[in-house]
Length: 161
Image 1 (cartoon, rainbow, N blue to C red):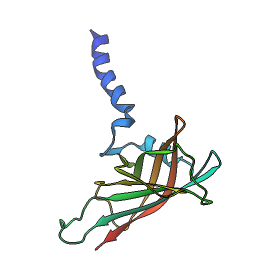
Image 2: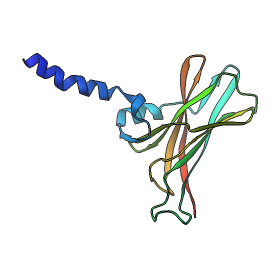
Image 3: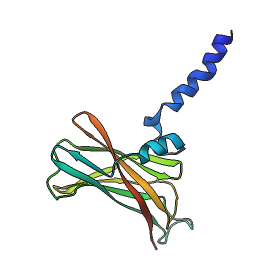
């Protein structure tokens, strides 16, 4: 009887604690995962490319919107620092925006390749954080079956009035 009670309590906790894939679109408070994301490198060398992450985040307060503005929009640009073409086969998976121990995760709703040396991902409908605060942004991407994360630290949330 105690064994069944133990499993009925522990099993759901274990499943939700390990389920980082299903946190998309919501805000999660997870100090350990926030630290793991912040440990991501600012540059990654892959297949002759020297990749960095550039971002632009903003909230729209232009009329006609609610008084507290529209949700956060984030653009991630996975950029080859030397303007060389990005290796074929790199695909953007998701992005994380980190404020303290709060994490907003979402898959890119749009992916654009305006230039050979930039892959741009757009994510909309984020939290109503800011404006005028800094957050960390992590872009998760895949290349040849491997998952990579790259960070842009202290990125400002801008405002449109």
